[in-house]
Image (cartoon, rainbow, N blue to C red):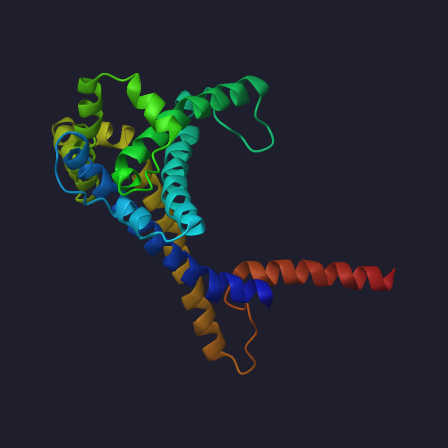
Length: 254
């Protein structure tokens, strides 16, 4: 009963709420990345939402939350994509069966990405340098001192491309370009090269269609019988039930 309530009642609502929250964090991240140049490459106004969260923190606990939550989400997204990439499956992480060399490769990549991701986040929150209580970190100061000014400006302006890239993904621009390029080569090329999301959508649609068919068959079977039995609409139910019943009778007879 607990598993049924979780799978049918609690889990769908929880996943929807989580999707909305993570989607909001994604929008805030793109917003912060797209407007970072206003404070890093020019003397513009600070419109970063993460910077506003840090500015609104009243104590150390609030400051830690304002920093750790968005930074943790950014690092989770980066490392999740990195580990799934697995360098074309040569160094992929397999739960419980990953070889030591693949673990070392992924650990090295994790260490290499940690510092740039942290510096990028510090560039998103210029409010750390505001006011009398200047909270600029030693990491950020040492890191920035070794980077030329032209490179810092490039690192601040280049993330603007992220806004256009996310917009292209949201409106399916890459799918339309792919369809336009493969339309002249016939269906063989289109079937050979597919996006991973297309295959998952096709698999999900197949399972959804099968589930609807089973539910309709079950509903019809329960409406046409005086004593409805759960599972009567599935042919596999009677096969397994008869086999189990036969085994039980043979065991009792023996």
